[in-house]
Image (cartoon, rainbow, N blue to C red; front, side, top):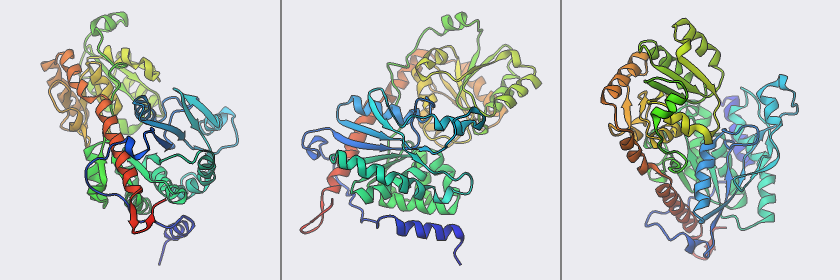
Length: 441
């Protein structure tokens, strides 16, 4: 007997366009411009994870990749970044009211961004979220392609519900879909049976699947996705924006004494900042800077009070992305005690500023912290583990210039090159005849 959820998925599949056979082919990478008649590839970027006028850091990692793709001149794009529908703007409604204030259309860094609304059913609507997103966005995609039919492909970010909905939209409008996995969409959401099946179906039907780390690729294969269809393309770092400054002078200006620890990110349990505060309590004289905000701030402040280190923990609040360089440069180490990550931008940015990293042993940590200059990976995700890793790093005290040199291998240029080659391969396969005398749309 089928569960209600299973029945809902069956109804959803009947409402969506039929699955098309995969056109992905193996072989060499075709030249990019030969597949688009000498013009840049034109993309519809589709994701609910994208910054907006109200949430400036929401999905900034997606924006960063797109900005560097556009700067290459080989890609052009319009962003469709749906926002949950909510009718009221009064502050008593909290985060939902903020969503109501997001504009329907805006431009950021010269990029046109649309924020159409879609319905969200809190808690109980997880299994049908892709269907709700698909049905709401289908008229938007039809309108965009009617106004400008020359869009070549859909570039989707986050597998669920975004990627699942994007693949259905691609079938409906006759465009190939490249979807990128970024973290929880592989490590957390597939623990639920219905989303897992939808993710795997979308991964099979998409023209290409990208993961931002080898660890995510391995996990997706473990779930049942075909390994040969998955390409690893890590995030990059803007080496001009994030560079090394004189740490000592910054510490003096801020009234800090060595050693200075730093944590950057949203204050949620998964980030493990409580482990960092507990470790700090065992290092007299050290100062911890926390850049970010979130629901755990109150409990983290209480923990610092209880451990007697409140004067040595400075809560900086949310810091604009463009201003983070000085914060990284003021620290002797970045601490990242997360239970899971995709490809953490904070690590890339910190290394580019010459600041090494002390990280918990989450899957994929070794892909970035792979040399002594990059930092240390703790043996356990505990205060004791983070503390031991810190002592290893502090005793070694890697040269900040060496850390920066290591990071110079992590810039955007090779990522952009590989990403454009993948788009070209997808378009070449999409335009191949599937049978004599029959062409894909």
